[in-house]
Image (cartoon, rainbow, N blue to C red; front, side):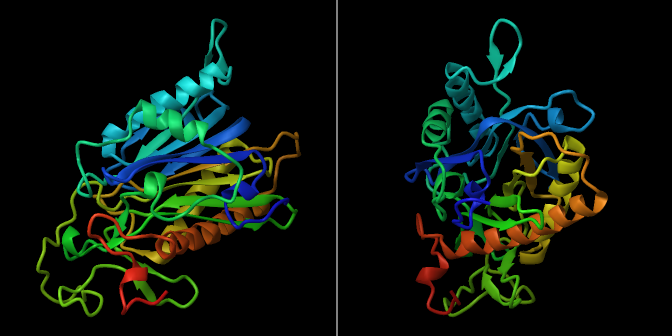
Amino acid sequence: MGEHNDDICDVRGILVGHDTLAEGGTGCTVIRMVTPAVGSVDVRGGAPATRETDLLHPLCMMHEVHAILLTGGSAFGLDAAAGVMQVLEASDVGFHVGVTRVPIVPAAALFDLQLGSAAIRPDAAAGMRATLAARHGPVTQGSVGAGTGATVGKMNGPAFATKSGIGSASAQLPDGHAMGALIVVNAVGNIYDDQSGELIAGARDPSGNGWFAPSTTATGTSTPFTGANTSIGVIATDAPFSKVELAKIAQMAHDGLARVIRPVHTPFDGDAIFAVSTAHEVAPQPSAMAVGLAGALAAECMARAVVKAIRSATGLHGVPAISELPFAKR
């Protein structure tokens, strides 16, 4: 493991770029691979907004991923993937089909249309800007890129939500390879610290003096709407895992969300985690134990990344972050 900034760019071959549309309360983030990566995905939410996830299934023949797009704007925001593809094609990056190269850009979107302007969404131009901005770490975290419009704690209605954003963390596998996580946290549920178990962000009480107790009568709408609880992210490693093994690691990484987001994976959300390997070397097939250890570490990184997204967030369009709430623990 080389440079250590405790973010996903500690994994060699990973670049991250943001495009922030603050007026609209939205944006997008591109995770770009320096060379083609192997990739997979695990979608747990019941209301996903995704693109090119089917080809990541282990039964499908595609073994190249060139970038991953995480975006706001709900399904509209998936248009930003076209801009990512344009930049990559112009750089001669993509799956070679004889007459050109087709960039493989899986994507997932979160619902942030209630914050700022619903008419402003990431588009192809936003995707181009985020791709061109992609750099090695440290990764800018908080209310930027796809995390610009992210909020948590909507059990008392969106009027009493708390601002969230994008977070990232990394760790080292026992064999020395790196593991990194990046997550955009847009949850209807509350967020708890993985270590202490304490509530750190959630639905605010109308009194302004603390967190809303779910057992009391809500003043807003307590019914979550489709896409309200969508947390989307990426696990990356430079360890040589196969597409099948990455599918298992992505599945286990969701355990990190379950540790710190309550509730999670509801029928109303679109929670999705991509997993990629940037390894170039050909290695013997890892043991089941190695895959299990990687999945457990991915979950730990994901849980820490969620908490970092909350603690690095800033208020926007009237939704306060915990740094602006006197009763919140930092």
